[in-house]
Amino acid sequence: MLELRGIKKSFGKIEVLHGVDLTVQAGEVHALLGENGAGKSTLMKILCGILKPSEGEIRIDGEARQFADYNEAIDAGIGVVFQEFSLVPYLNAVENMFLARELSNGLGFMKRAAMRKRAGGIMKQLGIAIPLGVPIRSLSVAEQQFVEIAKALALDARILVLDEPTATLTPAEVEHLFRVMRSLRAQGVAIIFISHHLEEIFEICDRITVLRDGEYVASCDVAEVDQSRLVEMMVGRRIENSFPPKPVIPADANVVLDVEEVQLAKGGPVSSFQLRAGEILGFAGLVGSGRTETALAMLGAYPAARCRLRMNGVEIRFADPSEALAAGIGLLPESRKEQGLITSFPILHNVSLNNYGKYLLGHFFINRSRELSDTRAAMQSVRVKAPNPHVRVDTLSGGNQQKVVIARWINHNMKVLIFDEPTRGIDVGAKTEIYQLMRDFTARGYSIIMISSELPEVIGMSDRVCVFRSGGIVATVEGDAITSEEVMTHATTGRTRHVA
Ligand SMILES: Nc1ncnc2c1ncn2[C@@H]1O[C@H](COP(=O)(O)OP(=O)(O)OP(=O)(O)O)[C@@H](O)[C@H]1O
Ligand SMILES: [Mg+2]
Image (cartoon, rainbow, N blue to C red; front, side, top):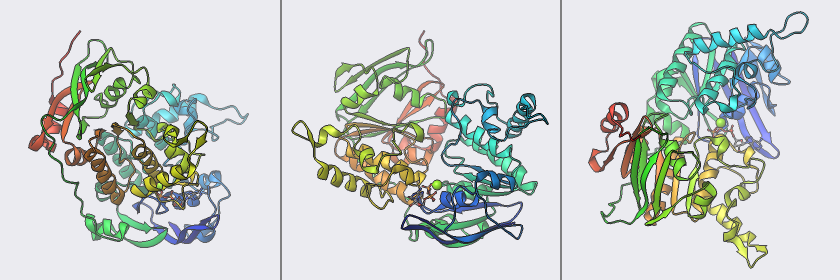
C-alpha cells in the first residue's frame, strides 16, 4: 500500500537519511525502530509533505506521489501524530481536532454541533473521557496526547503514523490505544508505530523496519526476532541490559533533605521522607498518585496545604524553583515542552543557561572557552548526537533534546537533582549511559530523587523507594525488599495517613 524507496535527506551539507526504504501493507502495524537521531521522525515528515526529500520516491497504491505540504498528504489519506505536540494551547479539543479542516455547510459556516458530535464519537472510540470544551493547555500531558491521536483519527487516515505516542501514557492508556490500533488494523488501516519501548513492539506490531544513523538496516516480521536481536540491529552492537551496581550507603550518611511533612490538599494524606547524601531515592506509584506534585511542592512550585522541610538540618522554604536552584536543587520536569529548553538557541547556551556565574571573569567578561569546553564535555557524556555545540536545539531529534536537558544538569553544580521521568523518549543504548551518569553523580556525594513510571528502572536504580498512592507516600522500601511485587502491591493497595 505504501512504499518509500531510496529516500535521502540533507539539511545544509549534512545528509541525515542515506537512501531509506520502507514498505507498509494495509492492515498491518509496522514498527519503525532506531536510536535517537536515527532518522525516524525525519522520514515521517517526508512522508507527510512537511519536509522535501533530496532524493527518492513515495508510492501509494503503486502510484508515485509528491506532497507540497501536509494538507495534500492528508487528502491522500495520511494522518500523523507528531512527536512534538502540534496542538494550539488556547483552543479546545474540538477546535484543535478540526483546525484548518472545519466541517462546513454550503454557505461556509462551520457546523459546530457536527464537529462536537464527531469529536465526542472519536473520544468514545478511544475510550477516553476528556473535557472537550476547555483550552488544551489546561489538560494533562496524557490527555493532550489523546487529543493528538483523536485529531489524526478525525482525518479518516488510511495510513496512520504514530511517532512515540506512548511516551506520555500510563499502562492503562497504552492498552486503550492498542485496542484502538487493533480495530483500525482490522479495518485495513496501515499504521506506522514509533516507540522506544521494545515490549510494545512485540505486543502490537506485525512487521519492523530498523534504521541506524540514517541507513536502512533491515525489515522483517516481528516473529522472526527477539529483544536482544532487535537491540543489536538498532545499536549495531550488543549491550548488556544491566544497571550499574548499587553502592552501600552508610546508615549515618548525611540527611540532605528532611521533608518533615507535605500535604498536597487539605484533608489529604501527609507524607514525610528523607533524602541522604549519595543516594538515589525512587518515587514510584501510578500516574496521578502525587509523585510529581510532592516534588514540586518542596520547590515551591505547587501550592500544597502544608510543606515543612530542612536542608542540611536548616529549616528552609522555597518561594519558587529559582530559589531552590540557588540552594543547589535542580529539577528536570516531566514534560519536554516545559523543560526550559529554548529551542531556537544553540545547544551551548541551553547547557550553560542559568549558569553564567560559573563562567564570569571579573564582573563583565564571560569565559567563553571554558563554557564551550564544558558544553562539549557535557554533550559527550550523554552522547548528544549533533555536529557541534553551536547548532540550534530544534534541529535535534526528540531524544537528543532530552539529552541536552540532562547535559545541562550534569554541568550545573547541583547537590540535589530531581529527575521526573528521566529516560522518556531515550533509546536503549543511551539509557544505560544516563544510568551510569546518575551513579557517577551520586558517587560524588550528591543525591537524586528519581520519579519514574518504569518499574524496571525504579527497581534497578533506586537505593530506596517511596511508593505513592492517592496523593501521599504509603510505604518506603529499601534493599532486597525493592521488588516489582512489593512496589506494585503498595502502589495499588496501600493506605495513606490522613490529617485534617
Ligand atoms: N531541521 C533540521 N536541521 C538539521 N538537522 C536536523 C533537522 N531535523 C532533524 N535533523 C537531524 O536529523 C537526524 C535525524 O533526526 P530525527 O528527528 O529524524 O531522529 P529520530 O530517529 O526521530 O530520533 P528520536 O528517537 O530521538 O526521536 C538528527 O541527527 C537530527 O539532528
Ligand atoms: Mg523522533
